[in-house]
Image (cartoon, rainbow over all chains, first blue to last red; front, side):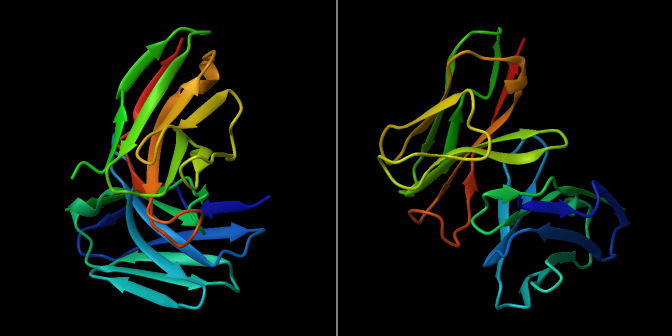
Length: 108
Length: 115
């Protein structure tokens, strides 16, 4: 069955550093992959979508890569801020399948 | 612009009781979805509706029924609630009909406890 894994449940970094979150998948070849942000008690909010023919996509301080050979997507937040603290979810294809999420904590 | 609105926000049920979770979107979206989110399990798709008048099962449909009442509204019904259905339920919508490369817009969720 299709499986999606996010590298760790929690990631703690210092303000100003780059946060890198990993999303790996198996038994699936999605045409695209999505990333969402979820704050406590709230629904997920869409951040970025990257297609299989795009190696990299950027939006302000966010960067997503998509390696279909490795079956992996990396999500980077540069110059991280405490306001970036949240849970980040990756989703395969049409968001039918979500990863469990990585909770990022940025300390000042 | 309200987006996706879910009611109620919180609900406590006893085992065997029934209830309906309501969801409405005001973005004229074609597709609507119901997910549940459990600790350690992530978001799992229960049912979805690619267009008005159609519904399909997702990954975990057992114990649930849905109704796409019109283009705006998509309800989720628990006929006989069980403790295993204790979860946070999210409704979402997307602009396109069917599954395309469209982002989802989520509601704020319903926290349901079944005792």
